Image 1: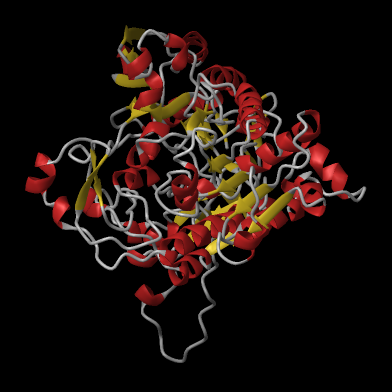
Image 2: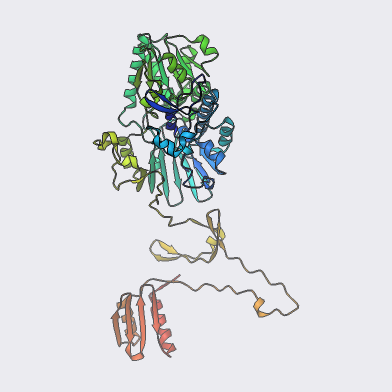
Length: 617
């Protein structure tokens, strides 16, 4: 199984988790839209199409692609192994822990289920009416389930080869998108499949993308391209900084709904360079998350997973990220929640980084209620996962300014076309959406994949046969058996040998071993019956190779006094009719037949003449 991401866009159909408990109704109208008033639920990976307990291995690309892991490992009978890099595991753990804590802080007494009835759902207004498979949506997992799921993860390093049941090797490669993010190579001795998901060619904090190892792939499965193909990440960072500065100068606060790892490191780095030049030196920056401290620390300790520039700082020694200096100088402060120390140290105007980017749960809900009514304040969206209009819908009418600066560093269509030209896979498999322009911009043919041969598109629940077959297997030969072989040269530089051996297959590994000698028969007083004597292993007959050339063979026959030969051409070769002796010789590509009645000396002579033209092995 390649990745197990959680579709969190389903939470946009729910009301934000408030800090107080109003009376319970399943559905509520808010600013002209209907929302479910219940603990937010998530859309899980497909579970009906196949039995997930039959999956042996899950390969994880990055920490955003593993958020559904506890649902799969804990509730489907899964007994396999999960492979991921160390930063993916540790930061994935933080994101799961944050999600659980956000949900547990504000438990909803009841769970709304009636609205999921097909008859009721059909009568609801959109987008609730159009939500797919709402019966499969699930509430958040518990911390116990997170720990149990992550105990099944086995750590791997970049380019490390992991053997799976002797059938294939898998190997993670740096994808350049986030700390520890990977593309995967799945290969046998003769075939190679590349899985490219969530990759970036931009110079940000992770190790750069390993492109060369993707070459010579039979099939390249491509997914996780940028969700914002028209938004340039550098331009968005510039816009982020200028809007932030304008708001602070006007005396307003800035709210940045974000994940606790990833783009936030780049935002803080950008602000570090920007603060002094924009005279924002006295403005406090707050990072509020149950895992804020761990996230900032992890980014500093995973040195070997960082780009070269940041790795070299570790040996100076300097912290690789400048947010360490922002914390030392008290410009950046981090808190587990808005309660406790934060409430006593909080001063405005300020900049707050907090979650969740959907605005449905987490401390961001409190700041939306606190700052939403003033036009001086600004909310800046940087995460591309959610439509900002849908995220803001339950808070309308809203006086605070809203700025949309989605920063998605993953590959765009231009970059991926260039990459595919360089690595040249034989076949590309990708989601159907990548093979046509976006619905809203149908004239933009540059926002789609155009390849020769065309990519194989897939859609939900489609089953594709990948266009290659395993034609060969590698077989090993034991040294003592190899010693006994007698090679014959059949043409310059090519030798061949026959082998009689026992083929031993175990764990998809095949070995040729010597034929065991029959055990010696112990001397017995009684006469053994003939049947019980061990079978005699006969030396194999020599194999013949080559072809019998017609003209040369006819000349040889003539030399031996056989002159009356009628030659007849057939589909497979020639038939020679020796009329005087009433004998036929069939010369075919893969065999020669001598048909001769009651003339053994002639048959033997003809056989020997044919053998002159053939090689014995």
